[in-house]
Amino acid sequence: MAAFRDIEEVSQGLLSLLGANRAAALQRRLLGRHEQLLDRLLEKQEAGEQQVREILAAEQKVAQSLLDAKERTHQGGTELQQLEAELHRAAAEDGQLQADLLQLSQQLQELRELEAELHRQEQEVDEDTTVAIPSAVYVAQLYRQSSKIEWDYECEPGVVKGIHYGPSVAQPIHLDSTQLSKKFISDYLWGLVDTSW
Image (cartoon, rainbow, N blue to C red; front, side):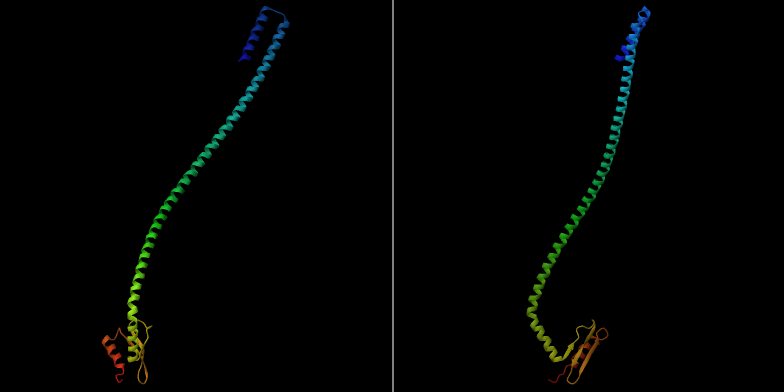
C-alpha cells in the first residue's frame, strides 16, 4: 500500500512538473525515482507471490496431514470396534466357561458324595460278609462233597452245566432251564446224589 502511495506521489509530482514546465533534470530524477519504485514494487510483488506459493504449499501439507490423521482416526475407530467385539465375545466365553466350571464343580461334589456312599456301603457289605463267608464256604464245600458235582460257572445264562463225579463214571450235566422246569432240574440233580453212605 505504501508503495502505491509513493507511485501516486511520484506521478502527481511528474504531472505538476510537466504542468509548471520545470527543468528536465528534475524530471529525469523523478523518472528514476519512479523506476526505482516500480522495481521495488515488482520485487515486493514477486516476494508476495512466493509467500503465497509457500503458504499454499504449507496449507496443502497441513490439509494432507489432516486427511492422514482422519484416516488413522477412522482406522483406529474400526480397530477399537473390533477389539470391543472381541472383548464382548471373550466375556461371553468366560461367562460360559464359568458356568461350565460351576456345573463341573457340582458334578464333582455329587461324585464325591456318591463315592463316600459307595465306600460306606462297601464297608457294610464287608462287615456282613466277614461273618457269612465261613458258613457259605462250608456249605459250598459240604454240598460239593455230598453231591460230587463240579459246576461250570462260565456257561451262558439259562444253562445248568457241570460234571457229576459219580461212583463209577464222571457224567457231564447240560440242562437248558428255558425248556425244562425248575422242579425237573431239581429232581434230576438230586437223583444223581448217591444215597448209600
